Amino acid sequence: MFTVRDGALQVLLVKRPSDDAEPCPGRWALPGGFVDVKRDASLGDCALRKLHEKTGVVTPYLEQLGSWGGATRDPRGWSTTHCFYALVPSQAMALHKGANAADVDWFEVDAAQRKRLAFDHGELLASAVARLRSKVEYTSLPAFLLEEPFTLPALQQTYEIVLGRPVDKSAFRKRMLDGEFMEEAGQVPGILGRPAMGYRLRDRARPALFPRTFNAPG
Amino acid sequence: MFTVRDGALQVLLVKRPSDDAEPCPGRWALPGGFVDVKRDASLGDCALRKLHEKTGVVTPYLEQLGSWGGATRDPRGWSTTHCFYALVPSQAMALHKGANAADVDWFEVDAAQRKRLAFDHGELLASAVARLRSKVEYTSLPAFLLEEPFTLPALQQTYEIVLGRPVDKSAFRKRMLDGEFMEEAGQVPGILGRPAMGYRLRDRARPALFPRTFNAPG
DNA sequence: GGAATAGTGTCTATAAGACAATATCCA
DNA sequence: TGGATATTGTCTTATAGACACTATTCC
Image (tube, rainbow over all chains, first blue to last red; front, top):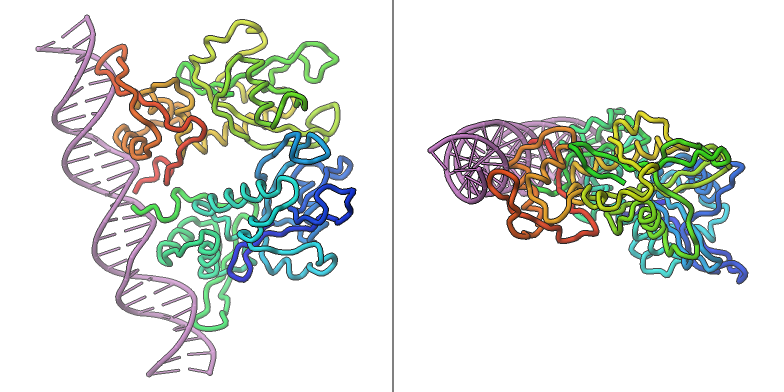
């Protein structure tokens, strides 16, 4: 689960129980768990349920990343995992923090990648970050990291944070507005300066695809 | 497993045993099977092993498509499947056909999608075709459908078959050569007319990514 | 009016598409 | 030489990037 907070891309980690009977005690891990064949109609449902249990957030943007299987990834034996990633606005999370705040926390992705995570979660996280950064180049994914209505300057800033480089304002606006995946949602007064137009996504389920990547001049 | 034969994109299907004790008897299905925790170090290894058992082909291009899970996809109960797709040159297959030819065959993807496949394989196939067609717009994937060395006209024809539309020759060549993902491999005499330069992929493991899709003028 | 931010316009470089022209093989 | 195909070149056009300019708010 990713968000953008304090000008950085952050990922949610949970601490494994320190019980020595459990694998990887005390390590930070990606939130997850086992399928409940009684309650989960699909793998995506299971992921949504797990996220809801850990964070209280419902129906964020969710995308399947891939699956990993092997004999060595869990000390208990051959196992498979189905990895999803979710994008949430940071405001949504602020409401729900509290219950078990001690063992759930946000980390900047660079810092998280330097930790030794439980199981093969370091590899899963690296893969998720790579997928996200790659898709940001040609999709509207960062819009899922913002509360609606959002402004174009806020969206641009989100792109710049995830991409790690500045983006030209004029070209950015043309690209976003030409895509026609947002609709106007009234003016949003800023804290300073001219108020900006607010926008909302037409389709909250899947991102728009652009015909080119950013910064491919011509 | 996809290939291009007779001017069409084709998919390999296997016939389920007609034994009524088995699920979906007599139906056509995507090749697959169960993980062997003794022999398969990973999910990809398992997929390669299964393909080799069914077709004799080794190490084609393989990419994970996604995973599906649920209570209803297999009559035997809650199950998950890990779906991969492979691209192979049709010549490679011709060598290996024979053993159990009756229950393994190629079908044009459009015809295959009109069949009622076993389990949820219709959905898996549709998803794989969509992924492939989408990635062909901005990657060098079709090169994995050709035997090396291949010529640019042959590659262009492969693109056109998968995309289902013609592509401009000049723009196509510029795009392929600028990508620098191929290297020259000597002249290949054609059956008629001027011989063409042969090329081979620099990296047989992953496709090159283009900064734009086809036919996005400008 | 001035500071700050939002939004627009103009120019240019680049690359894709269209299509004509040339090159090289074989019979 | 002629037919067939491969390869290159030229022209046009669309658009992204650079960057300057205008607009709107609050003090």
